Image (tube, rainbow, N blue to C red; front, side, top):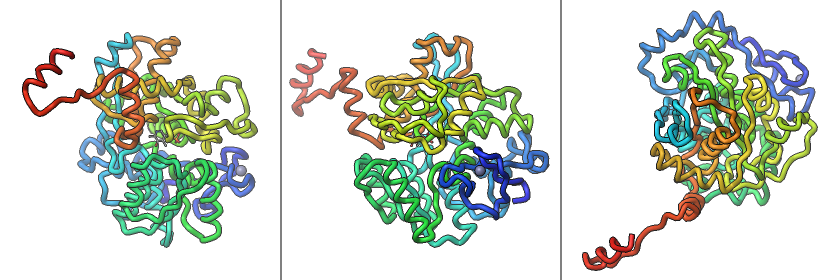
Length: 418
Ligand SMILES: *Cc1c(COP(=O)(O)O)cnc(C)c1O
Ligand SMILES: [Zn+2]
């Protein structure tokens, strides 16, 4: 871990050694989120675009020298990372653009982007011989922690709102986690989980609170840039709930710029649902994210329902420091984006994943991107996570199945009708 310099508080700027604090800066309670700072000159002696070109480990661990873990750390056996980056010419054409790619993180082992972060959590917990790991989650972070723990026989306790989609709860139960369905919102589950971790001494994976989650999430942009031969895109679209993913993307890009592997900072666009638009509002109105009151957090895209985004400081700078923007879309626009993305490029996303594409549509309409921009849209979650929303989405665009008796005559009747 000689490549990690310190943990820097985003509020007061105080720097801590990695063995001085575990999670947040103690001067600001749970809001004292810290950033992991690295010795890039040292890292450059251990990894380079050339060494990566020879590396046959196509998981996030190919970037191990850039992660806050020891070189000999035990890592989970599941294949996390190196998800496909699909060229999407039909989506591009429909929007009057030239270059659109879709990165499909619905392909990760537990079917969401969260595997990238939970993988780091489990490695860090093992580093400390933690008996139990815990997290609160809207569903996917929990499923990710649950699945990765199962692969390493690591006991864990999960807190999710009782209204989480059944598929996500099923994942937790199948993987064998101890599951707490919290009678309340994600924000309630988060608070309870923090208290429980404190009470029982569990290792805490909670988004933002645990500074290493950002570090796992940043691997997505390493992959995007490597998949594009280190020619960074002009713009990246991603949905935002707690803001940890968007902060992670920004962090990864800053790493790559600092090491000179890319030569420009892409603009980052955060997409939020209208009913859970804390970041969008704060950005639009220039509000202080530390004092702004929570919003209701109501949206069909359960994975980005966050009344008070936990990683709001990083989420705001990701957009302001890259000359990007926040974009806000309605639940109907999110649902319509599910079949549009599936039919345009073959990627089936859950609502929060399709939100990024809905955001691109909106950004084009608002003139935020230009036709020549090279644009990456991140699908963060698999469509099978939320079948109820998927069925609603096809209903909205007027697609339905045909009912047919098991004989050719009836088939002919149906064929004539359609
Ligand atoms: C968690 C999640 C997001 C949002 O990530 P944040 O870090 O909370 O902003 C988006 N999409 C999916 C599918 C997710 O699971
Ligand atoms: Zn501080």
